[in-house]
Image (cartoon, rainbow, N blue to C red; front, side, top):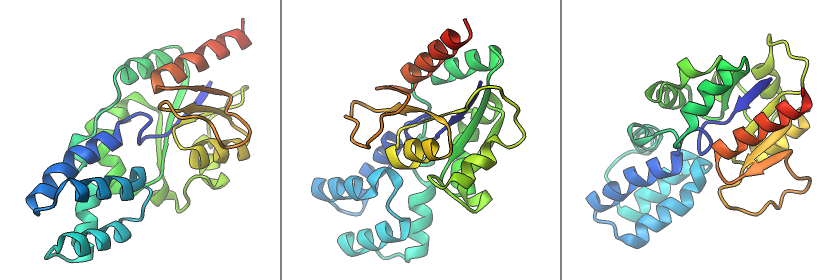
Amino acid sequence: MLLLLDLDNTLVDRDRAFSRWAEPFVAQHRGDRTDLEWLLETDAHGYTHRAVLADGLIDRLGLATTRDDLVQTLLLDHVPFVRCYDGVMDRLRDLRSAGHTLVILTNGTVEQQTRKVELNGLDAATDRVVISQAVGVKKPAPEIFAVAVQGFSTDRVPWIVGDQAEACIAGGRSAGLRTGWVDHGRDWTGGERPTASAPTTVEVLDLIAELDGADHA
């Protein structure tokens, strides 16, 4: 079985890391709780362009910095706080021990996402890492899914596991993949439902393993 795995808010808790960085940053620049709430909401789980977020912060907090410098801060300074969700590494080890192929497929910059992967030992726990900046295309474009599966032979339809309905689930479905949605307690509103879904990544991976076992019983 070939599994493509989203990184942010799927394998690692990116939002918690960003929040842990953001709170002291806002306080250091004399912002208040309203400013922190604005930053976390406007961040949009990392999907707001960093230049847009930087401009808003400079204006809101009166920061004496350039946009480019703040963009780098927004990209990298939360990375040391990034950690895998509980149980994820154990599940990845179990899946690889069972002979499955694991590929991390993530949007983002090479420097930022590589640091997250290496910090958590995910490079050693998976078979390939595909980062959108490195290949010049990002999810949900079907081309990036094709890059991720290239060279791996499988007699089964690959899976994509992720938390983003559009980038991961709709994109994966369009690329002909089976889909596992990490819903984090959200209701599905994206049309055709994912092949499997559960609140946590560990639960989604367990469901996929059960389905794979049932298919080949």
